[in-house]
Length: 155
Image (cartoon, rainbow, N blue to C red; front, side, top):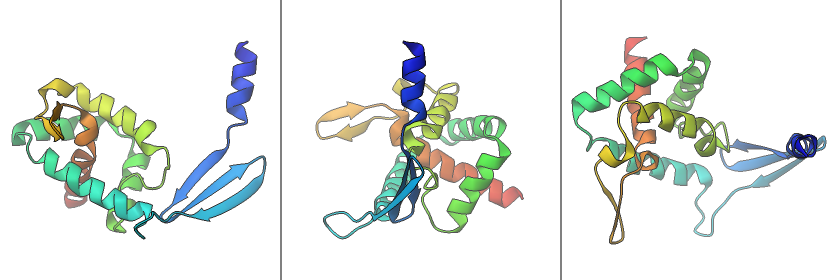
């Protein structure tokens, strides 16, 4: 059974996001498609809005706690990954835009690192309609932006 599962995952299509188009590789074939939403905006536009929203949430976390979280990232994020983040930031792209699965892979790992410093329920509430949410999903991109800005200032 496990061999069947690993064969299934080995044949999974590879998705690569390149700013405003998606490139899919399936069994050696390459397919490209533009990514434009109904209102004419692109995935990059949406990601930049999400970054801004997350940054505003992040600013609600006390300064000392924010710095503790950033210091944890400084220790845990590999240098080659930090370089990719810097390139995105310097080119005006959303951090992590080099990976279409960023939120579900690398982003999850980053959120888990941040939970070492601050649990989700300790974050300020974010309102979704009438519901309160306490979740690193709403904050981690803002934290990454501040981390990259500090790294660029130091180097």
